[in-house]
Length: 293
Ligand code: CP
Ligand code: NVA
Image (cartoon, rainbow, N blue to C red; front, side, top):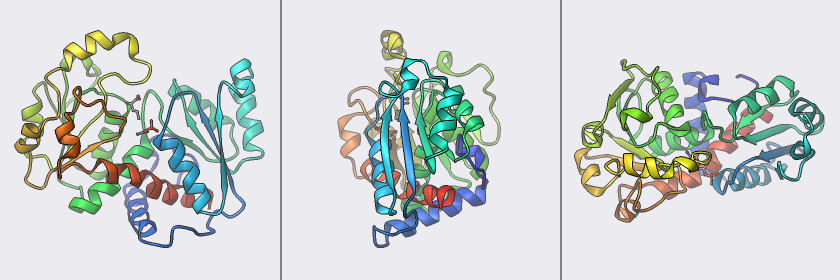
C-alpha cells in the first residue's frame, strides 16, 4: 500500500475493498483494541470540521493510541514557518499526520517532506476518507458497487471528484447532474462517467444518490450565483422515486436543508446519512491500522 493517502487513487481496487471489509469487521467487533498502542496522530486543520476531527480522534483512542488537534492558527505555521520545516519536525515525532487544507498543494508539500504517512482529511481537490465511509455504507446496504449506477446531484466539488476516482477504480457508472457552467471543462463522458444538466435523468436507475452543499468552504463569495444556478438540483423524495427501488441516499454532511436536500429526504427511510457519518470512524480505523500499524 502507498505510504500516503492523498487521493483515493493512491489505493488499488483490492486495497479499497479490503479496507471496506475491514471497516465492517471492526464495526462488529469489540470497539477497543491495541492495534496502534503508543502511536500518535497529529491533526492539522485549516478549515472547520466536525466528523473528520472527531472520527480520527476517537479512532486513535479506540485503537490504543492518541491524537491531538492542531489548528493552523495556533501552530507557528500560522506565523509563517514554512510547510516543509513543519512537516519535517512534526513527522520526526508523530506516527501519522491528517491534514485539512485550503489548497491541495499544501498536502502534497507535506507528503514530500514527511517521514510518516500523510492522510488527506479534505482539500479543495478531494476527500478520500469520505469515500471510504460512503463505500462502506453502500456495501452494507446494497452489496458490491461494481457495475451499479450512482447519481451525484449538485456541485462538482471535492467529494464529487473523489466519487469519479471511485467510479474508475471500482468500475461503476457515475451519473453527474450539475449545471454545465460548474463542471470542469476537461471532463469527458466515458464508460464510468455520464453527465446530465437535468437531475431526474441523472437519478434514473441509480442505486445510490449522493449530494453535498452548493457552496463549499472557500466558495463563499459565489453564494448568490450558486444558489440560483443549483436551485433545480435539489434532492427531493420525488427524485429518489425516479431511482432504482433499492436506492439509498448519502450526504457527506453538513447538510443545508432546503438547499441541496429537503428535510423530508434527510428523514426518509432511504436516507443512510447517520450510518454513513458513523462509518467515518470504522473506515478510518481500518485506514489507520493499514498505514500506521
Ligand atoms: N463530511 C465531513 O468531512 O464532515 P466535517 O467537515 O464535519 O469533517
Ligand atoms: N464540499 C464540502 C465538504 C465538507 C465536508 C466542502 O468542501 O466544504
